[in-house]
Image (cartoon, rainbow, N blue to C red):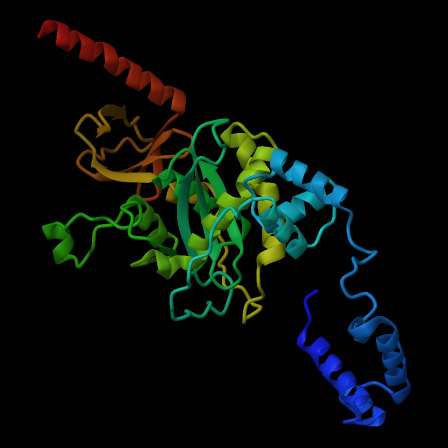
Amino acid sequence: MTLTMRDKQRINVVQGVMDGKITRVEAGRVLGVKERQIYRILAKVRKRGIEGVLHGNKGKESPRKTPESFWEKVLRIVRRRYRDVNDQQIRELLEREEEIRVKRESLRKRLREAGLVPKRTRRRNRYRKRRERKEAMGMMIQIDASPHDWLEGRGPWLTLVGGKDDATGYVWARFEEAESTWAYFRLAEQILTRQGIPMSFYSDRHTIFFSPREPTIVEQLQDQTPVTQFGRAMQELGMTLIPAYSPQAKGRIERNWGIFQDRLVVELRLANAKTREEANRVLERFLKDFNRRFTVPPKSREAVFRKAPGQEDLDHILCLKETRTVAKDHTVSFEGLILQIPALKQSWSIAGRSVDVLQLKDGSIEIVHKGKSLAKFSPEAVTRLVEQKKPMKSQLKTAA
């Protein structure tokens, strides 16, 4: 039987009373009990020896102890369904899916004793200086993507594209096939239509966000820097795009990916999600619960989102936009296609003028001049133009 320091003190005090070195009153004061309790302890010692000093329950199992059969059942369930899940989530899933309530520390000890190691080992924390959160929601949103085997082989690899509000930790996200300009456009649309226009996006220096191209002579003369399609769209929305120079700089959203790869993967597995559409439905439920539990109140209650433009204007901003010059026959060359501009009502010529050619999210192409739409080609019309090119190419190869 292992004795504590308190047990050893009780033995020494009782031994002192029996040897006549201290009185019963003094012993009671030292042990924090009344004198009559000292008489009881002495009686136990005379009857049972030194064990009489110790508490009667010492060394005995508590009658409230959970039966071993209960823990055997829990461990069987964990091995069968939740083997590669972290301890806290196992506890939550046992309560939600199996209606079994256990304490986290008790569960942790049992898992370690059974040889079920933790999913991730902890490393020593490095010293980092804390960057204070922004004061209000919408001041800055960290955006990033996480390619991962989210469906664990049940379906294709997916990329989770997301944004996290720096002030509150609120998260927006969606599964995409890959990290691309269109993926971030769809994320931006999700944020803009649900909340409004934030003041800034905080991202890494991926070429989706910042162009590596050197400025042309014209751009240098006009004091302009090259921008990507995403950067151009943010400028049109009046937003600032802030570059991060290390993963730690945008650590709040980086840490999210570790949490999601730990917890969201399990939710997708339990829902048996196999496609991107199914994964996004699970993600929507997951984010609703995640944001409810983990967002924090900002220093300023007043959010700083601005009102987003209407859907049509938003579609003309969150798109791929290029500038082209109209030929004399009122055609525009774009991506190898020849796009014919129909005659205007006023019947004047715009040959030689610059127009914007927009690739919209639905696959259509629109030609715009000074904010006015000159022509729009539906996805079906674009497909027909592409198909018309194929026979011409094959004929040229045959002739050669």
